[in-house]
Image 1 (cartoon, rainbow, N blue to C red):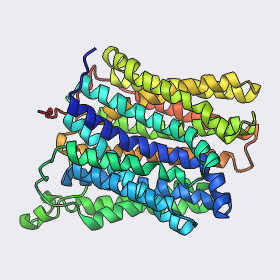
Image 2 (cartoon, one colour):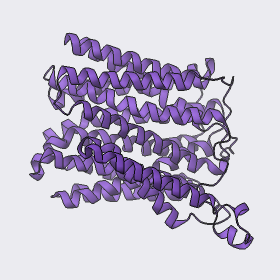
Image 3 (cartoon, rainbow, N blue to C red):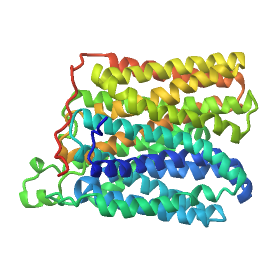
Image 4 (cartoon, rainbow, N blue to C red):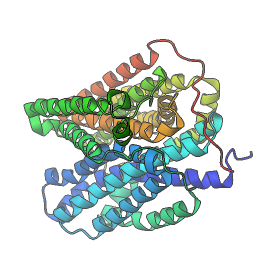
Length: 473
């Protein structure tokens, strides 16, 4: 069968997929390596958890800024800057021998991924034709998220056990070098956006607001009732930021010359279509349910069936291959035969069914239920859900706003993941008992039901048109 992509498009697709692969890869590879990392650094596991938390905070906090910068400076510039920062931070992590040198490395990785992720999505939106070609590209892009996550789970325990935990950062370095050379060679130069540059202090304010909100979500278990003032402060900061940003719109200013210099950071007309908001809601709820159910599954394998960290990672690895096959062969068929929103509903239904199978496994201690649950969740649900919600959330977005739209959707997915993990942490406060694991599954099921209600409520369009983009010559 003839490839739907030109040779240059295949290279751009590979470059874009490298961004989401390493973002997911570094989340999961560190997760399994934390116990050995804590031992190597001589610190408690609770302290070592900041290595993961800081990555998530910096990633979630800088995502929207990364998307905004894509619109102003161009996807090529921001992609190379993000991947370059990620590679440099990986070098720092590889040579770190104490917590205080490792934490800046993880923050740098998070910021680099936050720049490269929306730039990668913007590349797919700009250089692939709307319709089947773009849907296929997003399907492959989504598959790399699942492959990266599953590969990190498998390799994290293996590398940290057989070699040394430093090598979970060392394996990034040669790949980053290849990505930077290929990106500089094959990503086309883009003209700078006319108008004012992104407002620096507004971007910093926005980032601090998102960091505060993410911190409250991720640390809800430890903050206790103090989480409420933190969330209130984050909400108040967001409202004030929005009001100040609205005050900078040109029609609110009498001085037209100054108005051109102080364009609003968020801009206007990013989401003119209601279907896009369904996609954004789907992103939040998919993130809030997917990562917790995978975490609950691996934790229950480790505690109830007494599988080692290495064995647990190897059990998960084959499902990444299944996810890639689903995205390559099944997803295009689903997009041709069903509406995009219906494909998203199917992904949530599969996630809910996988959660039910996990409950059966916890109750019976039969490993077959775990394997079936992982098939539905890690090979099917995420493989079709991520690209479906990506397409849905870009509905009606004009080409010049693709970068900020990509940053918003990725930010919401990350915040959703943090919220879900925090809720799971509340259930596990007393330890990973069967009752606690059942409670975790109940939370996932509730989130899936909310997602189904949001996606099924109201009329749906027959098709979901994406903004027209130019083709590669």
